[in-house]
Amino acid sequence: MTQKYNKIHEKLVINENDFEGMIAYSIYKKEKRDAIKKGFDVDEFTRLKLQANEIKKYKKEANELINIFLQTAIDEKIVSIRSQAFESFEKIAQAEMASKPIWKKFTRWHNNGAAGMFGNLWTAIIIALFVFIMSDPDDWKRTKDNAVDNTFSVVEKVVNELNGLIVEND
Image (spheres, rainbow, N blue to C red):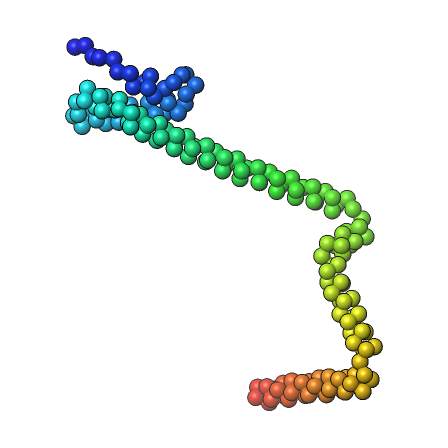
């Protein structure tokens, strides 16, 4: 029984470094094995698979597998790099904070976060001073008296409610 040599390997694999072609050939061999198991005619199968659209299909499938593999490898590497970078930054920050005196830590805290709070406080004080200077003294006195009266009325309501709660619990 003589078998004819088919040229599918040459059509799929360009050279020994053509990994896409080698994967495509592996896909072809798996399909051929499955076809033989199902009882298909090998010559008919081979003739069908030598067509240009089948060659393109094998190369496309191989390319997709390579892309999935590379994307997975890249994703794993990115996670690893991020983890290493985070650990390095954490070590650097801990070493830097441990080596600095307390006053430097305070100034760094002030300049990074607390500066915004202090800036808002100073802005409110400056605006209040500006309003105080520019306003009519009678308006300022009425506003102050109104604020004091409202504060006392709120305190009186809270005290009455607390007294009511104490009486209910007794």
